[in-house]
Amino acid sequence: MIAIDTDVLAVYHIFHNDPRYEATKNLFTKLNEQPKAVTIFNILELCGILATANRLKDSKSLFDRYLEAEDSIVLFPPLTGESAKDFWAALVSECFSRIQRGIRLGDAVILWTLEANQGIESFITWNTKHFKEKTPIKILTPAEFV
Image 1 (tube, rainbow, N blue to C red):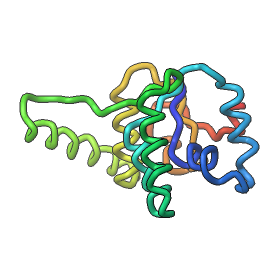
Image 2: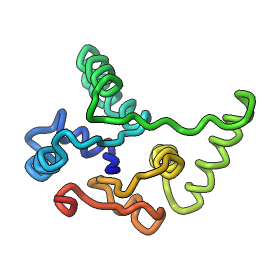
Image 3: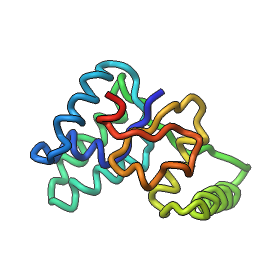
């Protein structure tokens, strides 16, 4: 399955004047109705971009749309252990192990979620340098994927 990063989603949904828009639009055209994976953290980041632009209604609408979409699968981190303390211990441990690969926290929780979910073949991002050679998942830009 193909997973999509926040920057790609932002260009597709918000920044239509961005020079990367055509390649991003081509990616979504190629994927069409094929299921696409998006982590809950990507959706929250995207909603945060809209919210900081004072587009709160659009933020909520986009959030709901992704949660209900039939062509998108929202990935969550695994619930491990028997308590909230166990979950947070796992989250901190898993994120810190990715931080030790040279990844920032926001990208670390996204990468942990992708790696913990089976079947993610490729991660499409405009920020390939943040992830390349730091994960077994194939990292591509939208243009490279198309």
